[in-house]
Image 1: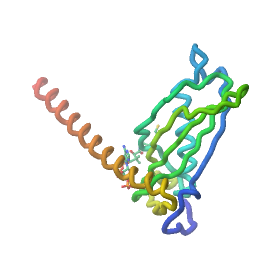
Image 2: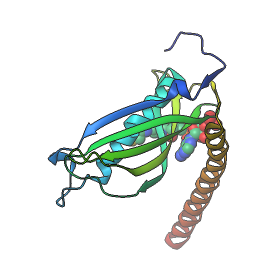
Image 3: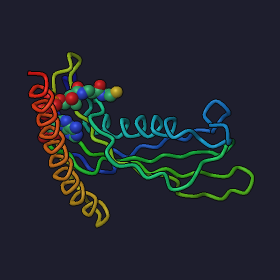
Image 4: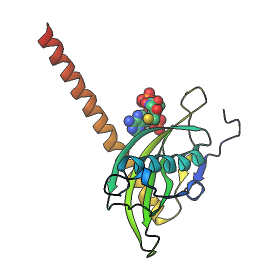
Length: 178
Ligand SMILES: CC(C)(COP(=O)(O)OP(=O)(O)OC[C@H]1O[C@@H](n2cnc3c(N)ncnc32)[C@H](O)[C@@H]1OP(=O)(O)O)[C@@H](O)C(=O)NCCC(=O)NCCS
């Protein structure tokens, strides 16, 4: 467990994280493009780095709820992922991850993907932990902070809708069986 006293709030800058990978044959499909699942793995890892820097305890991925694959990444490209916490709630944090690919021969850099993830802070026994609040400082950080609340509300509505649909489907199956 993290025994250090947690601050009441952290800045977005203190959560910023970055990772660069070279795309090798094992990472690609039969067309020589980066596999979507491999990119999601890189996104999960880079997102977790920002969440760790905010929570300073273990984190688990609760959701990866929006991902845009804008253009393919090619074998041999350098992929750079940047992440930061958009907003902290009680025990969860929304993290944004943006991905760029660099063609090593031409030097051309393109934005290839973006994603939002939610991480939940837990201790070493898996018990949920509260996290410090996030203090947005720049206009872009304030915009992401506000948007994160709207996405959380949307997520909650979607989760409630899915739960309700499951209950209805179960009641129909039970009714048909009796
Ligand atoms: C994530 C997990 C800890 C949440 O547990 P839970 O009992 O459903 O949590 P609660 O409903 O009490 O919510 C706890 C927090 O998680 C958030 N949360 C839970 N499920 C979520 C979801 N699907 N999407 C976004 N946030 C979610 C809640 O909003 C809440 O946040 P808050 O405290 O900041 O308000 C639990 O579902 C879990 O352990 N999942 C597996 C995690 C894992 O193994 N990840 C790797 C995937 S391979």
